[in-house]
Image (cartoon, rainbow, N blue to C red; front, side, top):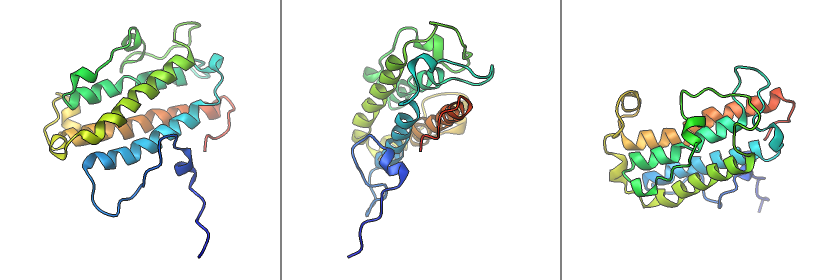
Length: 192
């Protein structure tokens, strides 16, 4: 018998419990979203783990979002997912975070403006852990409903499933890509 192939960097990156990336049989829709989310969160951990806390809100260029802003911004979106899933009891607001991190707010390089790295990262991890805990209980029918958000978000993602998948995976990766670029700009090595 041949030795097992070494795990890919992405598979090894995940800090979440091991789970198959492919399924031998169809699973609930939530399972497909969670496969991507596990890898996304593992990648986020790799990106932030070696950034010194005193550099987390440093802007090497005036138009480049820093990790504090990117991770803080992403920490707002599990609440949006719970809103879309009609689970308002799971929404937990964090005082001051919308004013610093919501879409449309400018990223700034200002001493003491942003919370400490550990607080931002902990908030990000806690909120996405709650999503991972809840998502498996969401029935497929719920993902097939019309997206309750209005405007552009419904135009782009007309169904709950497409909106939730975007927010948990694509949106995360868009901003994690900014953190990856920031790392290279400040002289940190590749995270993977």
